[in-house]
Length: 281
Image (cartoon, rainbow, N blue to C red; front, side, top):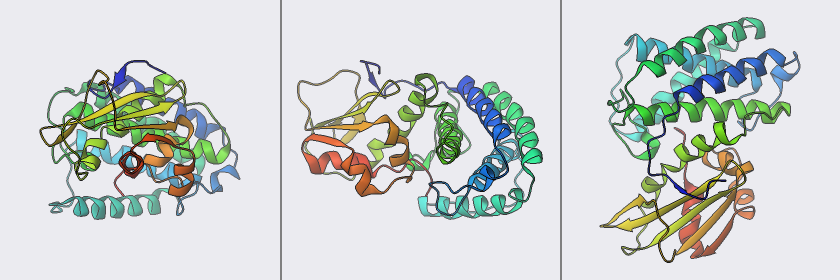
């Protein structure tokens, strides 16, 4: 675990997306027929349906992001509109691609992921992305943040398959830490609804070799990450790396998550960390 504070630097992760997807293809190729139908922590999706979702979203990224293909125009004026649109597209995509055989789905995934990786690597990370990272409260985002969000999607859905099939492999510092760093960029948006005086600080620690420390400070009525620890913090929240990704993707019961999380100091303030949802849901 890094001793430095995370959260203040851009997350330049495009090579990691390619690597994560390579692990995904190896994983899917290793599954037997029974494993494709195993349940996952996503109530409505089994392994096959998560794989179908990963294929669908990769194809959509190529069609809409790279090729600028917009078959339908939908007005999106709020976070609720984003949720409704994403849920519909996800539902429609899974309905179609779950019909594919494992072999066809895996082969299409391999073809598609090679092209999406090339696309991400071709982009200027400091340009403006076509869409904002809505769960972080952004209507517009820089490309590096949108790419990092994409990494979290690819990583956590693959991890759901690995959890269901008992196949570890991607919870490593190189692959998992940038996912955690991206998730936690949504915390200022969560804490913007928290009434505390300027100078209040919250330290967030994800324990384990993949984790790290992040510190939020309220200044001028805004919560921002800082790069040096203040002399004192109002709350120190420690989350095991094994469940951090599940907390931020609604993949664990909140009560179970709280029992495994340690909060020192202002407990009510610290518990806001556990309310972060870093997916569109």
